[in-house]
Image (tube, rainbow over all chains, first blue to last red):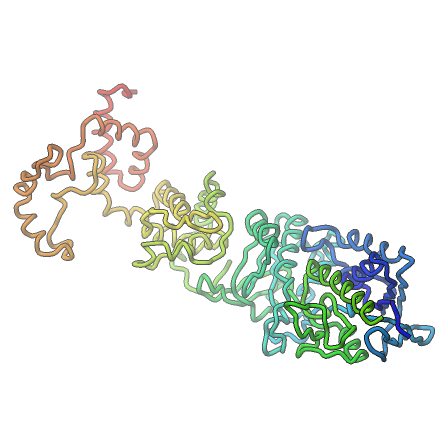
Length: 349
Length: 231
């Protein structure tokens, strides 16, 4: 028997948006989330302001979450995970496990929105000592500080005088195996630099980069103000080593455009960790027998023209499960995935 | 910023470097001259000086943004005099003005009468002398055949018979004039004196060449005494 339901896996920005659009257009959705809460990485990782527009992340997603949880046409299943799937477009049987046991749910189409996770600096091939020095932190650690409006050194609680970001940690690196650009870190680091400067006006900020990739309006909304108004120093050159010097961190690299090696002391070093497929994305690829690309993201065979279509008819993908995405792209993709899923359900019935 | 390289002016105290740096940044034009630098190199590609000298308008902008005091002092002492102040660099996509930064740094260098600045400008005393007393900067009698071999063998003939050559020019302001490029009208000259006097140029000259200043100030004051700007 065929099903008109759309089953969405993942309750982050993409999954929530897809569920809302499915319902808006009169279809029923089932939203499966393995955590006890909705909101995905922005909420679980305590994001402060959204990079585009500086809106408070919790506020922004609270609205979206309520739209979904208040909607009778959306069946939200928390603490649940998809463990297997049979059938084909129009008639999938999806096995879902939760604390109480397992059940099989029907779906005409499936949207995978299982997202990304932050790169773990333990695998970094440079010498950044994330797990050794308390004042070497990641973008995600900084988000948590910014959310509490307190930026201090973890080593001694003091306000930082000098803070630097090191870009492309875990991205654009053949040695690590992640040749791709994670797309958002340039914007996020610049956004954080502005927020830090607002909280600690005396701090001096540095961003060490390979290229600054500030798409569209990120340029004039984030990059230029960071450099011109907040006096963030952008230095083309990647740091190779962070070592303790007294109670400071000595950062070694090259100031390539000034043409010389550089050693600077910092109070806080923020590693701009990129995106990798989340554990959930890899699990789901396995459970649904979806092809993954060489990095483990869900493969999208015709990405430019058909960005939500996977290797399996009736199964669509939205957001960073398909590779690094910013929120703008994630939301657009979620809407398209909802549309494609509904069309598939109708076509199959 | 700190770099692992040799500081050419290590003997100059950091406090002085900082003071001069702050003086440049305090200029009210500064914020209009430096927004943020892409380090794209458009200014360098457009810069005539950069083609011939070890000079980069990009590095000027970057050094100011990085607050690199040691490099700043090198720029203040040396680099700024390689700029021809042609402002080709203002085609910057961020609307920076590296040539304008050079103007500001030059003014600070001269105002503070730095040793390096006096040395650099020594050769210009004669030019200033000419400009201020004759109204234009290069005159035929400044030509020395052995100074500029690239002017070719003809300059020998000209130098030897300068007055005859100039007598042949059928223009009143040029005919027979060898101590100026052209004869400047005394009224024009007095107007120039007044402009230089009231814009502080004489004080700047006093910083870099007190002897020259004495000579010029006397002439300027004497000339201005007979004008409507006497006081």
